Length: 434
Image 1 (tube, helix red, strand yellow):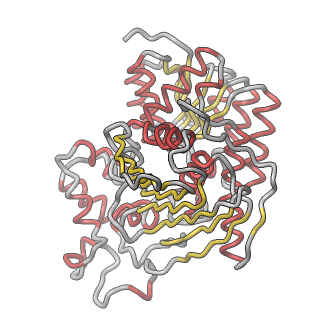
Image 2 (image 1 turned 120 degrees about the vertical axis):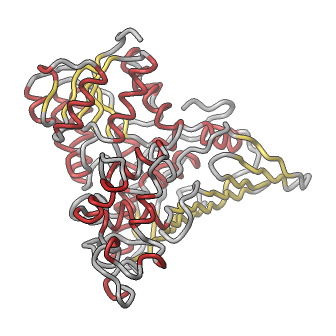
Image 3 (image 1 turned 180 degrees about the horizontal axis):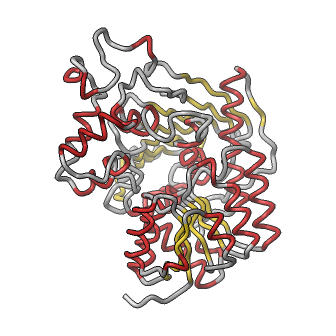
């Protein structure tokens, strides 16, 4: 495919950055012009895939920023604690930004990002990929069409999955608040943003409860070793790293994720070596994790509607599940299909909302949602029109503030009131744009 369209740089060539770049390159909607990546092997592979010359290949985002405005837009997919500084710096260079979630790890840094992009006059989209699914568009259209009357209450479940939680939030990069942020931000800011998007309003009051209940040293089984490869208990343990990662071999999707985070050596010997030497082979009861493994958030919206969000590690790794109750009907969705009950006729209609499931923990890439987001960002760059993007900096700040408020409520045991000026996009009448 001919390398045309707006020039796009990538800061962080891991799973997310590489995925978005590959989609943009494959469609020809843009050209990948530069990369910043600290891992030399990953940096070289990315540069070779996209034909990036050495003078546009950098060991880090700072070096790329020092080279000036090397592209029209930049995808920032660095680690969570390194979102704010590159976003502010590249905004100052006049680059439009696709920023991996979370927006920042503190409210102060998120505000700095908003100020920077507004001062520079550039577009910023946070990767709220759940907004970009056909399922979400269909659900919003059903609500906007009045199919359930006025929404009054909502239940939303994020079943993280026992092995996914162990991989990412006990052994992995998001296991500690001081290294990334609270679980509610690093995993579930997707969901609180999605609820505001679907209902068209940001919560006015929140409370929350949750804790790290299970993945603690005191729950370590008798006889368990520090590493799964040496453990007599391992065959009976639900969180066996040996079982999880060796079972990925031979499956290209699972070799990319989750195994890709563990090792690049796709052999039994290579995986076993990584589990013996690296962080992903540790016993889940002997790690340095501190993020919660279950949490609920209770919400009251300005309209008077109420909602509850539940995140749990103790489930299959499955689609989000949502039930919305209205004055003349209710609906239930699982990321693929939506069932709508009409209170007048009593009839139940099932709507197929776009085929393949999106937002699953099974794949690590959210299926077609990541592609739709990459397409929207490239289109926004090509047309200089933010209308292709589902949210801007202020909307992302508003939904992130819900997360920070919920965490304050959980830690302090209080109900937190949010400022009334948090924006949201109401479900439009008729077809709903992304």
